[in-house]
Image 1 (tube, rainbow, N blue to C red):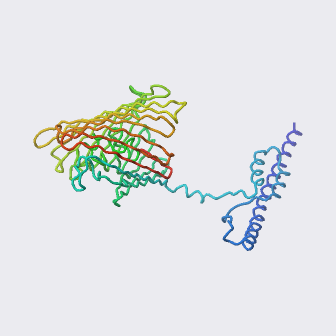
Image 2: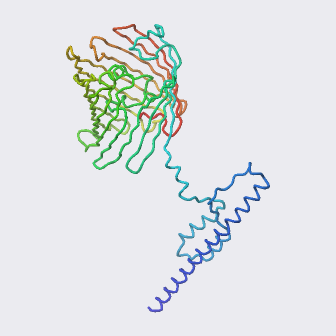
Image 3: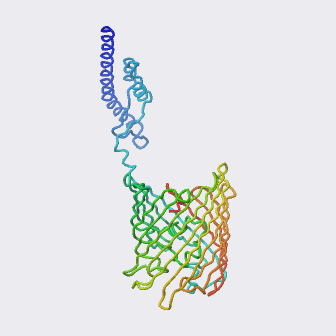
Length: 436
């Protein structure tokens, strides 16, 4: 037994000596290879010209073939893993290994840009200075860059990330869409968000304009929440609840300052708005799901804070995507309905509205859709808007799509109108056409 022990100790000693020899040869190869490479680079630059030469950056390490052969000869079999590493270093001459400082570029935020261009014609025609307000700003016959939107997104640390969305219209007006920081995956399945953001009232109010399934927002949103939708500066909390009656239940509660200027006051000392939404999600099959949401909002509609408005909403989304043909077939049905109880000095006004939208993908690049709208005005339930839209969208690539929309609007307090719209949207960067 003592002979076996002595033999093991001798083998261990030899292995240790060989490993020390390998380390010495590696250090020697680094010291020798660096000046040889510099001399080689200098001679090439002198002969071929610096303008046509791409130089190795400082601090780059190139292994020596001679040192690899010597290491392979002295390397014992019981450290084969080390042999695989060192062999790969020397077998590929010119392979670069950089220090940690070269990873600093990973700290740069992800920047994307989306352009939204539209052109439209309408019947009947209105003089440029007398377009009815109900039809929206700038809806004369014209071409128009609706917005160039910048997206800046970056993780701040393992717990938080920041998002900035700001746009510039065709007239050069700057608009800050969203700017917020959020804590993700907090204990208790909780997410927190602070800053300026679009509220989670229903589904489409949260989406950016260029990501909508049609050119414009449904009439119920523009009538009750304004052209820009409901948004403001505040705090938001979302909980992924334990499984209740649905496969997924999520509760979102938000408090903002500054309303939409239509249902809620956007300035004054009492401009706070409370918003909540309960999302319920079911997987119906491997190819389809159903989502039902309940939303509510409460705030004041006057700067003095004497009169209040309550909004209630329900949304439904059904989506079918066959797993074996997801790139060619998709069917989506979405509907949202909103009710308003608005206090005025003359009494309470009850009004409502909604829309039904169908989107069908019938090819790798083609989408077709129909949307029907109905809406009261929040200040008068006797005045209504009705609209029907037919939409055809062609995705040239994942970066560019073109859309045609034909829309007929019936108005009880103005002229009926028919308009055709061409929309072209392009995006560059890692966050292409994201809804929010």
